[in-house]
Length: 266
Image (cartoon, rainbow, N blue to C red):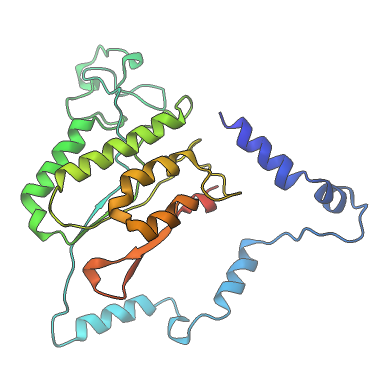
């Protein structure tokens, strides 16, 4: 599964004719490839860092200002959903202590020790059955629904069977979780700010940034997320999986930046 993106990266970006000639063989006199280190990038970015942020204690100073204020500041409460890793093949009673990447499935077998049997709501080394996620959302709505000003959903939705899953399977899990969140918070008016995780493109940890709008999962989930993103952000998101959209709870002028960290993965 990983052979195609690895070979493409090696031949396109690493073992190019110019790079081989310049850096490996040393035959070319005018190298056109310059290797940049993380330290080089860090130095360039920090060169124009504002004076008030020069020291690493600037965040602590912000909190000191908050605590020193005479009047209590307005507060916002957010729900953060992340890394639910739903598994539609989860089976009660199967072995949770298996040697595979994903346990609690039929192929995991039935344990002789009852203590190692997958429970109704989950197993220690397993991904999550959908009913557990649904139950969690029901509990949140019942006990905290009126307190929530917004929802941040940062992805990682599919199970860990990355060795044999498909792009359609990856999209399926994101869409199913989208449906559950919409159903749980139906007519609540609570804004949702979704983003993808490293398990939400295919293969895992990989995304092609060579052209806009060519990533299959992003092209398909944007349809389901359109009502959360809006027209402008959806048009931006579908290109490379990142966007900026109004941060409604914080008032006019505030925005949420939805990052796609696959660009910096591995």
